[in-house]
Image 1 (spheres, rainbow, N blue to C red):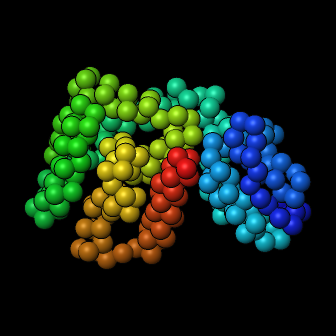
Image 2 (image 1 turned 90 degrees about the vertical axis):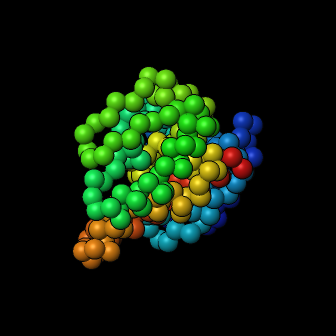
Length: 231
């Protein structure tokens, strides 16, 4: 799409906030009006549109893409999205530890054990830990507690939580960012313990590093989205 507007600005609407391109209200790809819950989010979207050059690049507009996704998909499928995220509790990254070398296992324990303790104290969800990659069944009580924690997020928050969980591979890390237990950079580093150890031992692959930078940017954008949604 070519740029057709001179100015993007946030506006207050009857049920929230939106963005107008000159005088034209912004709509989703499905043509639904874009109404977001906070002025901060609308202002962030307006800034994304104002920053565009002659050609619009959706990849540079994460807040707008999140609004589109929430309105066109997540709101109508909120229960299914929440269930898919809660399912990550059954195979959470933090529950699977390296059998060797000892240095890697110690690093995982130092970073991840306090977070599992936090999840147990905060949500009543005590997750078991396994050495290796064999699946470790989690208790129904723990999974139900994590499901309730996910359900406490509205559709907008679920959009952000979705990226935090799926990118990191950990529901506990996603909830830790949502609850303020970890900052987004801290959670990202915790999700990268295995990869960072391999890099230190064997060196960094250029293509893998580029992919990692993109994933990190998406992870940090999801955390920022949560802040914008909550004003």
